[in-house]
Image (spheres, rainbow, N blue to C red):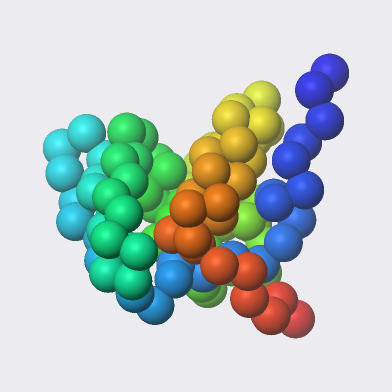
Length: 95
């Protein structure tokens, strides 16, 4: 079994300089600071990203969005990519 990315057990939020534009395929994320554009090609991933700030961890945001346990590694990798591009930033966990 593939280990789950550690990003799932951290608290994240959308970077304050990121704008989200929903699209039929998912969404476009634009970072006004870096001028970088990212595509979310999954509507459920958009739900996860929008839920990050109010969830205790990314794992909790995935659960709230209805992500199945077997899909968590894929969502963890997507979150890691968003973190590398500064679209999401780590934040203080909600107790």
